Image (cartoon, rainbow over all chains, first blue to last red; front, side, top):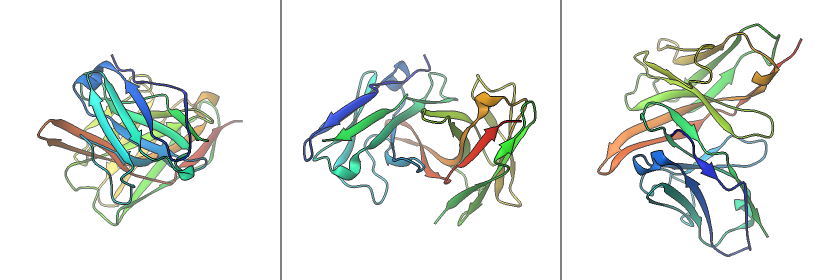
Length: 108
Length: 126
């Protein structure tokens, strides 16, 4: 399968913890990466590999995986975390790239 | 610090070929361990991977676009390019170029788009 499935929308109260999930058969074999995109801006990588954060990404962002599901967790969500979040990985062949449909995160 | 910048026409007529170039600055496109990708985003929609190229010229394309897409690299100019033929209004989108880091850790393949261009809006209209 070459599909990654995300919930279209998730909300979290300010300061609380939220988990955004990404499901797909290929995630049993390949890591997911996670991107944050704010309106009018290019996506920004926030998590890659097992649980790696690029320089400048706050440590409240973390990643995990189990079976066919990858998760992005924001511990203590801030107002500036309100954005669209996309997961991506490889398809089952390993040669092609796939993206999830994106999750719109609202911080209440 | 590596930066990517897209360039090309913002308006393309239906049935014509969309051509964009991504210029890489602050690093060499010939550095191993990276693929160089094109990704697009239709207005108000999600991200769609178009394809990528390695500096050696190896390419992989999204099967849904493969018949119309060509990605090429010019290492002397530190650029890579996208050509999308026979465009229609459905190809109207923001087009991003991105660097794809690619390596193996103890558990498997690590693969992610770590650097993105700012994106360029391309409208297909007569």
